[in-house]
Each structure stands twice: as structure tokens, then as C-alpha cells.
Length: 330
Image 1 (cartoon, rainbow, N blue to C red):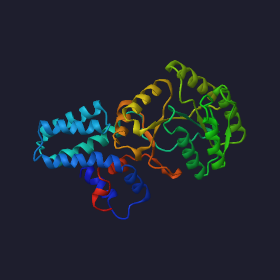
Image 2 (image 1 turned 90 degrees about the vertical axis):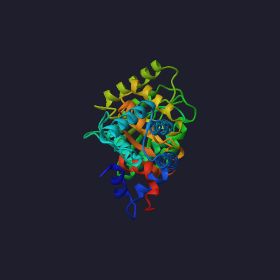
Image 3 (image 1 turned 180 degrees about the vertical axis):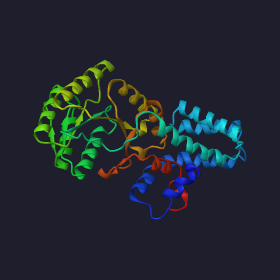
Image 4 (image 1 turned 45 degrees about the vertical axis):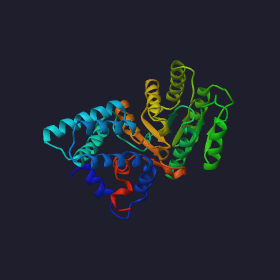
């Protein structure tokens, strides 16, 4: 059984669970742009040929799968069609799904979702990303998630340079009923982080989420600031930061991948949080990020509610992207 059929059998049954429905709804725009074009392509060709693969390549690239990965997938499909005598477009599309799954599952760091909590003392999650990607909201959603799991959560307002950043994070902390450590405007972020680390230990916090500046003039400045914060955390809490999440706005497409590439050079990234996935038709960015960086996507923003930060699930993602409500079981 190919993965396409497997996904249909796994998620197409009634009733669907809430997580599957959320993926289906959140990936609706990407599904319409990607799956519908694949289906139309298959119907236009009785048998695959060079033109078919050229159009398939175009669909993948325009869905933000990434140029390199799109070219490689099409080359592998062409080889497979020749070696196995495959000429049916639907069989090629089924094989494409299999290749997408294998490429993501076997590339780079091991796939994990939830924050890996340290056995002793506070677990520190460092959050990085440029301004405007939904960093503050993502921090709030992560805090909400782990508070609801019974964890004692604290925030550190390390983005001291952006007007309103500390205030916004403080508002979220008040709404969620959790502690926040903050300093004066334009104060040294590392000093705020130092105070937060000490307080987290004293108050026996389970999870300390550290916000960082979303804008630095140069890569050298960014590296210097993040290195300083990392050193301070490591001195106060052994092994910290235990996790480092990069926030990326899905609607920025390949620009978001470029941001990720830059941050990976200066930060110990352990995962990606992709926001605003429900607002884009280019859902292939998930595959592009994994292929280019080897870093797993840990969470996806699939809506506005606090609950709409979903653990990344490769099967549900591919199902939402390729099948969704079109599986006939909605």
C-alpha cells in the first residue's frame, strides 16, 4: 500500500479527531493550491512524459517546496517511472507522496515534538526570530500549552530593544496568570535573562521561556547577543538553553527559509515553529525547511486561538496538504 492510500485509510474514517480536523482546516488554502493542481495535471495527461514532469516541477516550486528539493523529487520520480515502467500519472503522484515522506523523515535531526524537559531544575526554551513573525503570540501559546499540562511556566522578556515588546509579553503573562521577569527599556538582555534564570531556580519553575531581540543590525551583532545570553543561561542552569525554537511566518515563503538559514548559523536551533500556516497557500515550506536545514518543525500555527498551536505531525500534514476534505469522508 502506498502512503497516499495509507493516509486516506488512516484519517479518512469517520469521525475524524479534532487534531485531524484542525490540520484539514488550517491547510485548506495550501491543499487547494497544491492538491487540486496535482489532480488537474493527472487528468490532462493519459501518460506521463517530459512535459508532465516539467509541470509537476513547477507546481512543487510554486508551493514553496524549494527549488533544490523540487528538482530532486522530479528526478527521482523520472528514474522510478523508467525503472518500474510507470506511466500512469496517479501512480507517479502516489510515488511523490512516498518520496516527500521519506525525505522529511530521514533528513537531519531526529523528529521530536514536545519540549524535552530536563530531569532536574528548570528547562530553558530560547525563542528567536525576526520581528513580525508572531514570536510573542507563539511564546504565549507555548506557555498556555505547558501551563495546561500542569507545568509551572515563567517568561523572560529579553527583547528589550523593541518598543512594546516587553509590554506585550507582560500582557500575555497577566492573561495566563504566570510570572514574567523584565527589565527597563533598552537594558542589557543578558541581565534580564540572568535575573530570570535565578528566579526560575528559586521558584522551582518547570519551564522558562526566554524571548530574544527580533532585530539586530548585523549577523555579528546577532551572534554576539545570542552567545552572551546562552553563556549566561548555561552558567546559571546546567545544560541551558535546553531548546532553541525559531519562529517563522509561513506567509513569507522562501524568505522565511532564508531567515532560518541565517539563524541556524548563529543559534543552537533544535526546532522550528511555523506560524500563520492557515493564511498561506504555500504549505510546501515545511518540506523546504526540513530539506535545507535538517531541523524538525516542532509546532504549527493553524489558527488564531491559543489552542491552535499544534504539534507537527508528518502524517496529518501530508494528509491535510494532499487529501483533506477531498477524501470523500468529510
